[in-house]
Length: 253
Image (cartoon, rainbow, N blue to C red; front, side, top):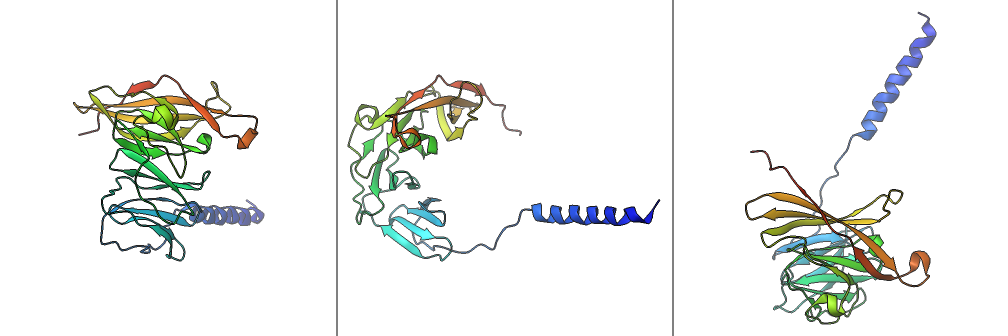
């Protein structure tokens, strides 16, 4: 063997070791952003990349900068208003949405000084989660514990309605769960655009029966845009396709 090959092997070994060190995940030192005397309902992403939205059951909603740990703005709510979900910031509409008593969805603008917490859309089934996706443009998906879904256009002044599908919802879908099932978790999944049938989005829901059996419901969504605004056209409606339900194996003992 010639001596000229050894440096190449050493260089390759050093390069591989260096690349492996770069690929190792690392965690930064945690910092305390908020110390609250009341229960924190949840934390979500803000309108800007360095912002967090903190929701407290009895104190309202506040926005913090994660770098400086400073509070940017906050909205107090009346004592009788109880927030049951983490408020979300909707970047497209520059609005915030919150859930009151698991049954009502209301919103306000980022420049709004005061929030009453009243009004909004009332849902028949308790709200499980409020989801957002760029494919829904200026709207969000409110999913109920019965597996139902309503596509709600974000607004600082949501109209009051007993049934969101009547006046407040762009589109809605009936419950995917039977009377024997409850939705435990839900998420919006972006789909590959190059594959048929070319639906950009799917609504996933984890269902659990009273006996404990789990199943996964997958429902394709097809957002329909209004006008000829191209990439900036607002959402007109959403087509809900029939769900595909797959039983899941029981968890290991």
